[in-house]
Length: 215
Length: 215
DNA sequence: ACTATACACGACCGATCGGTCGTTCTTTTT
DNA sequence: AAAAAGAACGACCGATCGGTCGTGTATAGT
Image 1 (cartoon, each protein chain N blue to C red):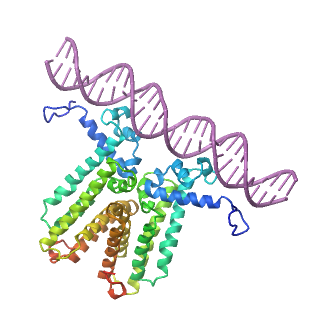
Image 2 (cartoon, each protein chain N blue to C red; image 1 turned 30 degrees about the vertical axis):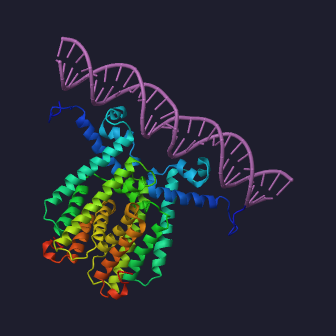
């Protein structure tokens, strides 16, 4: 039952480590980075608590790795696919839709824990707070840059408040997870998608670049 | 130092109980209803842990009371003031603005904990989950009703998707708290206000009912 | 002034928290 | 084949969790 050794280097626990990390991110999205307990994590990942400490020095190291792991997933599943779409308003919409699809996949069942942790760690300076803040502001800055690109391409009118638009896309995407618990995923995700689509169509100099609302 | 006896009935610890409850709500907005610990709460409220248990049977009772207390505050500080505004789109905007002002006051420094608790308690049936879900859906239903009223008054075009509009107002209001931690309150609250104002002005049959954007 | 009551306290409880330790088993290196 | 280096375990640690108990005390009603 040896792990597939993809290269010459060290192997064994990597699969286990990755599996634990994935569970940790999922749990943190529900309970928060701080509310995540190592006992529940170990049980959920099928290892003992001391098995966990073979991979991480302490809880803080796990939290840091969890932030990095989630950031990497965010990039792979949301940013990269959207970057294959043409720049401008279509890419903005693609980013929003990829995010909803990512949430629907259940990797972050409670929504992105950056947003909970941003509050949790606000008054507790340290590397975890820094990394969470960094991940969040990178995402907001990225959204804003894409909006600015759309302005430069002439797909949005000059003078468009790109930071404002980034705020709205962020808000409408994140809120979906919470409301989905109450009203059902399909219904709420449709609303979340339509909200941004409408907003972009209303702003766009050429709305025909975007799909129709009923699509 | 006797409490003001507003009526003939029981008095003494009420002030203390109210003070504890207020602190509990504030803490729960940051750490979640579940992440709230009685030790921190007792310390923050200046009582002993056993002093706390003079007022509540257990943590669950406190959580229930906290939900009710927050709901009441929500009504007093957001709903009631907005109900004094004329029905229709002006009232919708007033609701959004009152919410931002409420958040700015710091009663719920982490944002409304309904939204965190909705995720926290999702897979744990019980009275707390029920009450949280009830509070959230009451708020969404109220927003939707006000939007429907605006349609009936002719301030929004017939056929407007009122549930969609309620979703957007909710999302744009709640997200502000989180982003405010990162980017500063004034900046983000301005964005949150402008987002809903723009949306309403774009929809309205008579935009002059609403203030200018630059206001 | 006396008594009943409710509030608040410090001390304490079992369970769980994050974390350590010594051991065992497997894998990699030599 | 022997030795070195992970990886995982069960047992256990002090601290903190939610919660109990007995006591002291301030107040309300008589």
